[in-house]
Length: 309
Ligand code: FDA
Image (cartoon, rainbow, N blue to C red):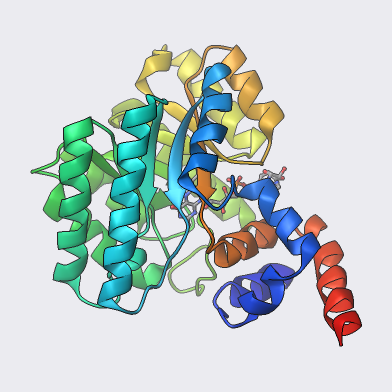
C-alpha cells in the first residue's frame, strides 16, 4: 500500500514545492542524489572511479510539457557529455525520453536524441535510454530502434522484468545486438500488463538475465537484490562467462557495501548517479522501494509544515 502511495505522490508535482523546503526530505534526497549541478555528479564519479567503479550520470527531470523545456534539457545533457569528456572521468550518461519531448511529439524527441547522440559520438560516450511507465514502453523502444542503426554501440535501452511483454522484447533486442540494462521496474502498473507478485517479478528477472548473459551485448544487470546477484554469479561461473562480457549496475546511495564487494571480486560495476534540482519524483520512487525511510520522512514533513504555520 505504501509503495502505491509513494508512486502516486511521485506524479503529484505540486507537492514538490512543499517537500523541497523540508530539511529532512532534502537530507534524504541527498543520499540518493549527488547534488544539483553537473560538477557535483562529476565529483561523485571521481570518488567512485578511485574505487574502480564507473558511473552513469542522469540529469533529473521527466514529463516535460513544453518544447522549450525539452531544448533546455537537451542542452544540459549535451553539457554533461562535454563535462565528462573534459574532466576525463569514467562515466556514461542516462536519459529519460519524457524529458526530451516523448509526450509532446515523437519527432521532436527523436531530433533531441539525435543532437545528444551526435555529441556522444564526438566524445565516444555511451548514452542509455531509461525506461519509464508502460504507456511509454512502445514509443521508447521505437525511438531506440530508429536510432540504433545510425548510432550502433553508442546507445542502449532498459527492459523491466515486471512487464509481461519483456520476454518478447528481450528476444528482439538480442537479435538486434542491442545493449540492454535489465531492472525490475519502478512504476505503478496494472495487473493486466505487469506482474505484481515479487516472486513472479524475480523469476522473470532471472530468466531475462540468463538470456542476456548468454546472448546479450554487454548487458547491465541492474539490481540490489542479493538473490538475483547470486543467481547471476552462479550462472556466470557454471557457464564460464568472462567477467568483461557484462556489468552490474546499482543506484547511487543504495547498497554501497554490495557494489564495492562485487568490484573487489573483479566484476565490472557501474553506479547510476542522478543530479539536478528536479529530484522529487526520483526520491518518491526510491522511497516506494524502501518503506523504512517513509514513516520518518512523512512525520517530519508534516511537523515542519505545521510548525511553520
Ligand atoms: P528490490 O526492490 O527487491 O530490492 C532488493 C534490496 O535492495 C532491498 O531489500 C534493499 O536492501 C535494497 N534496496 C532496493 N531499493 C532500495 C532503496 N530505494 N533504498 C534502500 N535500499 C534499497 N527502473 C525503471 O523502471 N526504469 C529504469 O530505467 C531504471 N533504471 C535503473 C538503473 C539502475 C542502475 C538501477 C539499479 C535501477 C534502475 N531502476 C529503473 C529501478 C529498478 O527498476 C528498481 O525499482 C530498483 O532497482 C529496486 O529493485 P531491486 O532490483 O534493487 O530489488
